Structure formats: structure tokens, C-alpha cells
Image (cartoon, rainbow, N blue to C red; front, side, top):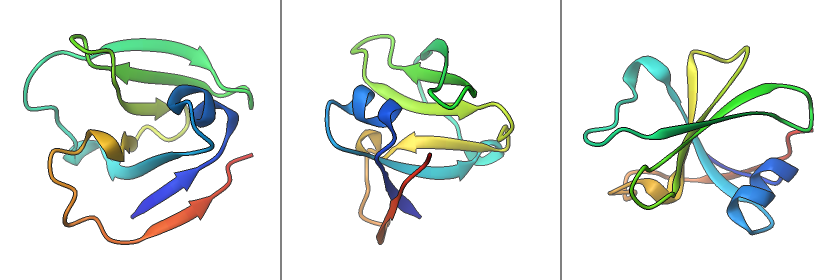
Length: 94
């Protein structure tokens, strides 16, 4: 599933009205090379978040949220091959 999030965190991080995210199981997620850098912060809703960035280019790769440790939200624009991702679902996270 791919969804468009328009929370203020995603708007700020993307510089747009929304960000395309793809939730995946943390156990199935891996980064094939490199070591991303974390940014720990609190969302406007008061939830602890870790946003992970490419150490080389600074691009946001994925995020982890407290209370949802089993899910990783991958920034869809970071996918090397997105041909198999079908459907975009609007989502508003308040």
C-alpha cells in the first residue's frame, strides 16, 4: 500500500502538501548499503519519531514511530524500482 500523508510533519519534510509513504514490516525492511543517520524528534501529536536520512545526500529514507515498532514508513520516492507499487490512498493523520 502507498499512501499520501498530509500531516504537518510530512508537509515540512517534503516541502509539499503531502508525502508518499509506504508502510512495510520492520522485519522485512533492510537497506542494502550505507548507514543512514537518525533524527530523533517529537511529532506535533507528541509521538516520539525517528526519521532516517541518507548520510551522503541527506534524503529522507524512512521513519519509525513509538508504539508502531513493527512498521517502517518508507518514503516512496526513495524506491529504486516502484513499478510493483500499485494504488495511492489518501490518508490524513491527525
